[in-house]
Length: 138
Image 1: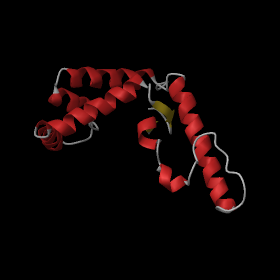
Image 2: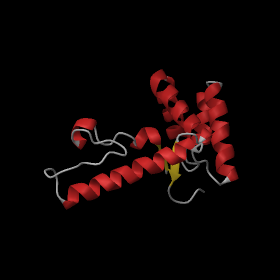
Image 3: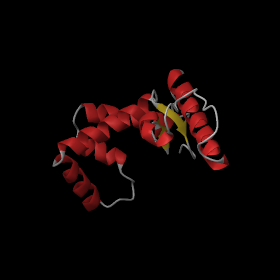
């Protein structure tokens, strides 16, 4: 599972954090939440700092060369607008031919969905906005 800055950043809206609460700020004085709120805020700050470090350093790419090659191939197929070729590489190999054709047809009929999928794969392949890869990379 790839986690990117676009999928995590901004979990809390500014108005949900409280006034003046942003990266690096400290609340002074009394009032406000209890220990649980402080722990949640500290966790959120640590998560945001981790994302910022990863993105600043250029993000994270997979360490599995075969997976990276597959991502690069998917990006190239998306650039060529080869939906059927993309789907053959993208779907699980045990998917029936009928289901594979159905999925390709769904993408052919929805240009916005196809563009978004291609863009997301390109982001993953590039790694620039990926800050963590969880699980095995097979």
